[in-house]
Length: 163
Length: 468
Image (cartoon, rainbow over all chains, first blue to last red):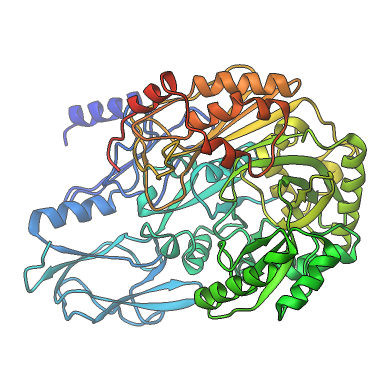
């Protein structure tokens, strides 16, 4: 990005009242936060960006983090299967603190194999893969709160899944 | 004071609690099922967490999911709204164990009032008049007749093991007792596997009256007066008002004081409603207590000027009643308020009407309040109950409240789904309603009469069902 592009970007951000802004390039990853009319910035967390225009005509006050969108985009492009959280809780990638993670991208897993733990109400729930295949991407990070239906892993299945 | 409250509910009441939170400077955390992704309560909360698929048992009634969401959002308290988990003593217990404040009474109180027989016994001990009922099972027709003679006919036979109208028979003369007793027994045995029966005094034309109370954690209780909820269909309230045309100020004060003393002794905390039936001789009989905020709380708010949901939050945070209500002994009642429950259902056939709302315009103007989470282009899901809006009017007297309600109902536009607005218009226009001559059978009688041909039917027809 040259200086002219950078200047235009900065002016655009100021014009649109954007308070915070991140950007990565490979695999995208975007994070925008606008200032609200009221004093506090309004942040809606845990809202999947798959439904950005919920209220037609209504101003949107912030764009949530794009992790689920990245997941959706990846799935659509390459026919990957998303493992979604069946419960709300805290995501852990390892069986215990300090232990190596259950899986990492590149690993081949079987259906029924434990991929992670989600802690809910002091109970550790082992989350099993629902397909056999290769782990392509992990969306949730260790210790992150996740909600019902949130994408945890993208898996390239060994067999074609029925839609 | 709480920093964050999770609302374990949906729809208009979730929005209502969010309003109270915003006004108190408390962050509101919404939970939602995947069917409610585009709900207003999700939009207006400070944070929103999806806790499950559409079915209630897997989302809003799923205690581990709700508590898990409360933990990851790090909330101080949970407001359960009404219905759902609000009177689930187990849930209140789990909140306590998880060090989250449950906004409501302690679990033991919820449990006490939830067990109907125990609640009646507690009230009876305290001197509150209760509807006469047989203590325990009535084994034979002979015993039934004997008991009926002591309280006077008519009486109702009920199944000990169930409800929903099955195993129930109303006995009006001594001659019919044996046959009806046997019929109820057979029906109960078939429906619930248990033919045990008990008896209750039956009131032919009861009026439903309820008293709103607030209590702090220091033994102080105040009564905010009564609501009359006699307009019901199949035991579901449709229209409520405050004050009741049947309660004189002396009785209001007397009963209010008695209830406060009783509830203080029981150790009641937070908001609650004590329900009564009034018989044809204007005597009140306790039936049950609801240990939560109620759907119809706005009529009390309009008449007393007290925000009940904010009060609940403040009480749960340990505030004293006297701080919340200036001079708590002296509740002012001003004017008259009426609420109509707007349901997404056919106004005559009562078939639920889920689907997309294509046009929505709520009435406004002086003395009109609308509590709703519905909006144009919004979808009413079929998984949940059909209440979509509450239309409340307030006037300087009952006549003004009624004329405002008639006007507001006429100006309420909801298209794309059926609503019961036409039914409410019929009720408001009815001479018996206007005269205050109502009882819980009023609506049954109204529905036996077909609506007029012409304008009303045309308007109903125009509102075509989009997709069900």
